[in-house]
Length: 176
Image (cartoon, rainbow, N blue to C red; front, top):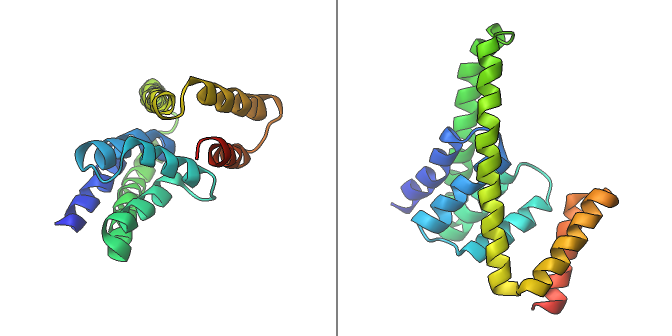
């Protein structure tokens, strides 16, 4: 039963999600934290932060980690397969169709209408992480980490992996 639940927890977000890994993370969080309760919101946020510091697509890293934590190596395999299969099937099925109609105004409008939905889903996820951080780390630490991260990313063009590692080090020293 756990393998079926793992499969559904990652297959459904990946089949209905559009826009790549970051766009489906809120959907995965809803399954992993909300529906099945395999992780707390805090643990999910920490796993996501660590996963973003590593190379490769975030969705497969999250699937592998959650699957392994829930059901060992078999769970990791099932979760990663459920993450990859929808993309593979949709790519094979839709690539020819989209390529034939790539200059169509309808296809271009369809893509434009989806972007705001993805932006709102990511904003909702960010708000959830912010509220969780304020609750667990406090306002001062959240502001320090947020301001330093923004300056590092925007002003100094620091790679996000280094920003995440810096936040982890800060948390280890001041919040641990």
